[in-house]
Length: 287
Image 1 (tube, rainbow, N blue to C red):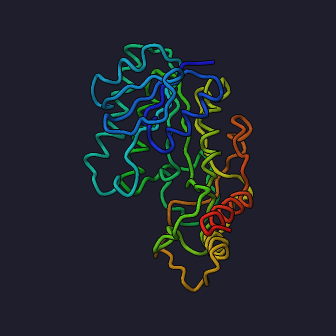
Image 2 (image 1 turned 135 degrees about the horizontal axis):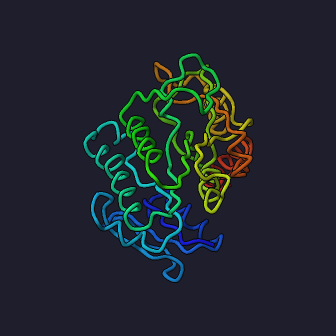
């Protein structure tokens, strides 16, 4: 087992990753902002480090770790509104983290959480492969791509995970506008499978030096219209109420067979996700 640092470890995804790492037997360091919520962590299995990616506070957290899982980032929509903050956290923060690792603990394996948004809008609706040219077309995607470049150019052993849109298995109010076109190919991924892909990269020599597309797999390869139709059927709402954005979103189908073979994370199929949404809604309705 390893000592693992999770940046952004007190966030929603960071908590799930940290909990799974602990359950898998790892010792976990949590690094996050001073104002983050640290309640619920087991002090016997975690160490809390409060600070900022852009200063020396990160140094102590990496002293005795084998692996760094770098999740800390500004996400959309804030990432595409507060451009200066996003650049400072997503790019400058990653640069400082890498510099500290190279200076203090250069044998670390870093697992970097990136995004399929770096491919840009998929105008021809084709399946995305890793060798597709990156074409980031908003600020968030650009900062993720710039951070990937920093990671790849470093002297640090690394794994880069380009993660697709994450579907959370709890009922949520439909958005005012769905972030894709009706006929657009989309392939989201169950939240728990994202967690598994990240955690299964730890101590995985087959993942060293690799970049992967992380997506739901074949059962999740549908169209935007089908996703909305299935969701509205659970809500018993007429499809005529569905509004879509006017241009393609950052979604497609992805070649992920290699990543799943190595990381073994595609465990929750699309039908399972729908069943969980249906059950959660029934629970909310007291049924």
